[in-house]
Each structure stands twice: as structure tokens, then as C-alpha cells.
Length: 113
Image (cartoon, rainbow, N blue to C red; front, side, top):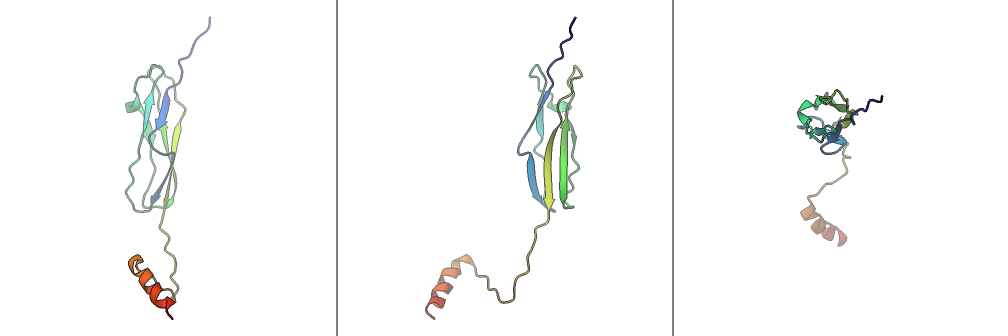
């Protein structure tokens, strides 16, 4: 006598598996969907662990898990979220920054000299 196991449920990420966010910006996870072996939507049964702290730079992993009504456990799916500060460099004192609209005019004047 053999016992056949149902195929495992499948979790599908919505969006990218790696996301970059600026520290302090708003972040809403795109989520995932889940279906069992009968192609029934079991997304509402997903267990999501989302430790992302948008106020702290770092690399975070969001995990998605689901178990179907037969007790079959899906393969865990993850999304990596990297939160980073916008790095502002030091501007040398002898550097001049011009608006794009005026750059060509200024360069034209300088070219005459």
C-alpha cells in the first residue's frame, strides 16, 4: 500500500525579490499570493514575518509561509529589503554647481576667454 502526498502549496511573490528603500521613506510590502495543489487561492492563510524598520539602515528579510488544509507546508519564500541612508558627499569649496538651464550659457561665456 502506498500513500500519495498532495503536491505542496505554492507561494508567489508580487514584485521584486530584492527591494531598496531610503531610510525614513515609506515602505509597503507588495506581498505574495498562495495556491494549494487544487489551484485554490489560500493567500489569506499566508503567515508573513516583516521585520523591516525603515528608520534603521540594514538588510531585512521578509518571510512568507503557508500550510494548506491537508497540512502540506509550502517552501518558504523570502524578499530582501535593504534600507540605506542617502549618502551626502562633501562638496569642495572651489566647486561651482549651476542649474542645467544656465550651464550652456555660462560655458559659452567662459569659452570666449
